[in-house]
Image 1 (cartoon, rainbow, N blue to C red):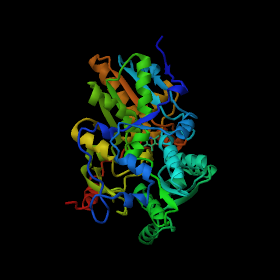
Image 2: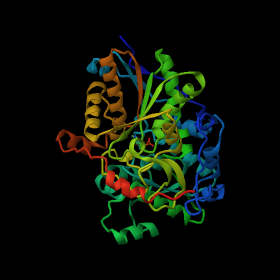
Image 3: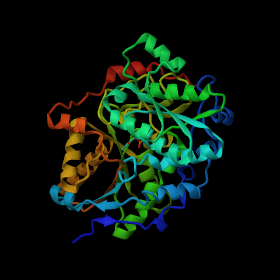
Image 4: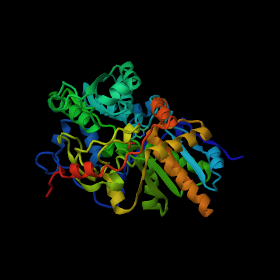
Length: 453
Ligand SMILES: *Cc1c(COP(=O)(O)O)cnc(C)c1O
């Protein structure tokens, strides 16, 4: 009988993160100041982030040591298990071998704690008193509230208003850890008040909540710093513990993946899982295909433009070159809230553009079909975000069946879906809809891209 689980001892927890900057096949593009459109200086970023994280952002060292206090907290749930989906393989009747790394075992149920803990650590070390952040469906907010409570930092969270009302349980998790949670747009910031004045019933968006959280930190005279759960280089790097462990676990299994897959919102769990495999492609002659799975309703990689754009809706965050649908684009209210971001991490975007990474868009209904098929075989209920990776993995396994190929497929299951039961209920009742690619809205948003010389 094939083995189901590949477990690493705590002593095998990685001692360093992998930094893709050392191996990028294309030179990094500069991050620009939102007003001057000139490359940002560390002083500008220093208002929002501690210097240690800014240095990680620009570092080209291949490995960056994980501080011991961070490793100690990681040990609460890491190393995470890697499974071979033996039962799913049987259900699909595929010759392929399917593996998945499960990040839902973290206390807050997703991979996001892999970066919230180091971000809180470096802020504490730099003397920061409080952090501000945004959260969509609430996964990032819960991960950062746990980390802030471990390190004794206050936390102010701007939560997208529609989720604040529809997903009260995650708000309560954040409050359990001691965070203050506000529905965004709120009346606490100039930007929030300006949105409320024009559209009092605004459901909010991730881009708006980012603008509020950035403003709250930037106007605090240094007391508060801002923390972001995805998109930035240091965030992606913190997540590489996932892929570094997975490399060892695949070795335990005696196989090496032909295909690796992750779902991509801002790109952090995708990068965290796949970059250590890309390292093997770039430096060790491996030829693994790398696939990013995104929602068809917010398809920044497959339909967006590779261009300079603002990181937030109010155009106050730095400008980066990335695959974007336009910073003013507000995606449809799909259930994979964590994938509703207009842009994508710069390094992921650059490597999609360069051909090192493939991207695929999945519609909402087929994504939930995959999630249900997966849970009925493997027992784990995937987060709707993670279900996009499940969809692509199943499609790859079905292609293997059709072509009689015995490929090894590995994907990242970024979190569990225990707080997404309303979405699953709608799916079972046949009420979930597929949003068409919102071409007109994207065209309109594209008109607002910054004009960078
Ligand atoms: C937030 C989230 C995502 C999307 O964010 P990335 O930065 O793209 O990883 C995916 N899956 C889960 C479970 C999440 O909580």
